[in-house]
Image (spheres, rainbow, N blue to C red):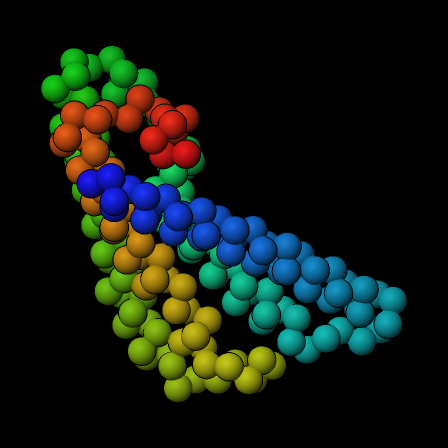
Length: 168
């Protein structure tokens, strides 16, 4: 269990860094697009599709990291108000639902990638499937991270909140 935790911690840190870089790069691309449009009177044809492709990737990867690190918004008032045994069941159910959503992203995101792989984004010259590839990857990671959190709960290492040092 500790080995899995160390590996997923590194993966989540890398995902956050990749996502942050993607956000910065997208911001630079949009800045260039605005500069080109209003200063040079020539909008770069590739900029909008590049920004959208980057957004799909960095949002998906950051969402997966959020499952591992617990930085998603959640309301814990009901969870804190119930006895520990009920809280444990609620946490397992919650993580199971998140994991199921990750599996759904993996399956249907993978199908989307396969169906669009032969389509080319004209302004970028890359496969549309490549643009969507972040969805099944993030889905698989979400499922893994939710599974890990479920194991933590079942091992009676219940996480109190997002600031639990084991997840940082």
